[in-house]
Image 1 (cartoon, protein in one colour):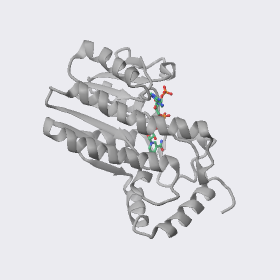
Image 2 (cartoon, protein in one colour):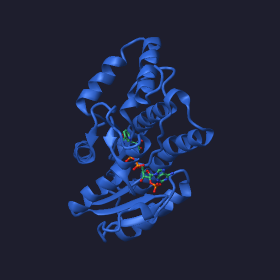
Image 3 (cartoon, protein in one colour):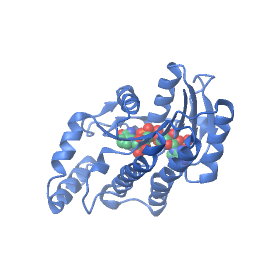
Image 4 (cartoon, helix red, strand yellow):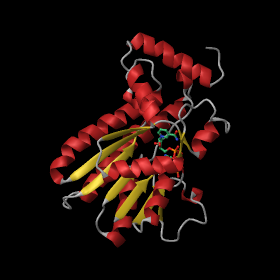
Length: 253
Ligand SMILES: NC(=O)c1ccc[n+]([C@@H]2O[C@H](COP(=O)([O-])OP(=O)(O)OC[C@H]3O[C@@H](n4cnc5c(N)ncnc54)[C@H](OP(=O)(O)O)[C@@H]3O)[C@@H](O)[C@H]2O)c1
């Protein structure tokens, strides 16, 4: 099995890479900063420098990986940009990176994977969205809106690629304990409800891909909380989510 992971240099993507290496698969990863990959990672891990915001960059990394291995069995896009954009307080530069990585980058990854799998008549593509993306309300954060777009894009590619034997799985995690999440929260995740450790996340994600699920939302408690909230009228949801975000930042409610 040949697996390529965009955004595999740290966090969920890197942990997924280790999981597939342990299963004996051929694994390639990419990111903008390959030097982030721990030095003690397996020698058989193939590491590429690539930026998902550039179509040429991600295509070249994937082609180079496949020049050794031919078929592409699984492509996972974990590349994502997030910040603490409570109440819309993010810089123009942060917003630009979020839009380009989460929307353009997702489209580029789908395109690169689709082209590589074309003609194989099989393959799986997975993308990491976010549980926040299942809710629709006017004042949701930019991050939430980009991840909602990721779920919609996955729906469109699933529909388009089904006749060609290619499955598409969208993953919508709640909070996962990664270095990046810790960095953004000054190493204090005490206000993150239903936090999942990264190994549990890897187990859930890999099982969902294997069983070709369309959309997996985890953990279960977060899923049901979000589903219950999403039946509320938009104005009420706006107030609740805004207060929650301010509380998480120890800001005035
Ligand atoms: N942790 C959570 O609580 C959580 C919850 C829900 C969803 N998610 C989503 O899960 C994914 C992984 O998050 P994480 O917590 O594991 O964070 P992370 O460690 O920062 O992982 C993000 C990965 O994406 C790569 N990346 C970012 N921009 C890129 C670009 N333009 N081109 C190529 N690679 C790029 C990063 O590597 P480089 O720096 O090398 O580019 C890194 O490998 C993200 O999509 C995030 O939105 C996370």
